[in-house]
Amino acid sequence: MKKIDIFFNNKKIIITGHTGFKGTWLTLWLHLSGAKILGISKDIPTKPSLFEKLKLKKKIKDIRLDISNLNKLKKIFKSYQPDYVFHLAAQSLVKKSYEDPIKTFTTNTVGTLNIVESLKLVKKECVAVIITSDKSYKNLEIKRGYKEDDALGGFDPYSASKASAELVIQCYFESFLKHKKNIRIAVARAGNVIGGGDWSKNRLIPDCMKSWSKNFFVTIRSPNATRPWQHVFDALYGYITLAISLKKNNKLNGQVFNFGPPVRNNFKVIDVLKLMKKFWKKVRWKIEAKKNYHYESNLLKLNSNKANKILKWKPNLSFHESIKFTVNWYKFFYLNQKKIYNFSSNQIDEYNKKIK
Image (cartoon, rainbow, N blue to C red; front, top):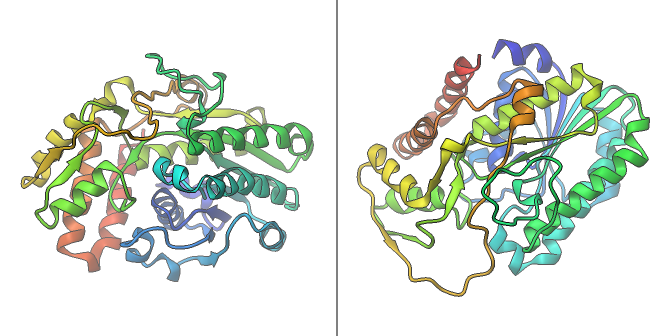
């Protein structure tokens, strides 16, 4: 924690999407590091909500705002003058992107456009990390991990909206931001993160935890689908490392970095279920017959060699540890919700001790 404290203590930080799963954990982590945080989110995305359970509203400046509202967003950036910006606000569910593609593109693409436009109003030195997704890549179901210079694209509205956001970022960097000596910006791509406090719909572990906490069956759609399972702490550590490195090294300005788990963390859904059983004990699932679902990728891998080499970043949790951290969080939550803030803070401390 000490290394991170040096960079973020008393720094003014804007986090968009701070009420979401990753955004909440990032908010807690940087709050514990002494940062002065202004969070921007449209709403509380889930019930239960990690943000609400941790009662972070009392510890930061919490603003409800749709990032598609450019005028209000610009006023916040102009007034607050942040030292750092982490942009995570997004419509992040593939299934929901089919149900409401217009809103998905408005939030993910136009929203990102509004963020980079607002950055132009920051007069002091400011580092911005824009978080997109591994699904920004045109997924050709290749076996090797995708590299930062691979083609962007998307077959579903969510992926296409994220790829479009990346084009916006590239355009704004080349046209405006790289000429502003006080602004440094970089893009972070991560994938399918897991961890305690995720209650998003149609995600494996949240569905399991919600069902198993009531001793219900959980329905499994694609037991043999392979995913690069990664704990949320490893991804956030990547974002934080990128921000720190970007602050110190202007040569990273405008660059893109992947933050994915090692290849050995690519496991099938059924493997995740079997490992979760070791920590939760009473588990129940059934395999649903294949239906005509919308397109969904079966294989997604990132090549993180660039982050390993340049940023000296690497994941600190193994697949086994990631599942253990995650299930133990839910076990504690369902037993003692009132003390979940301390437990969550202790998990971050435990993770920090693993950072070399």
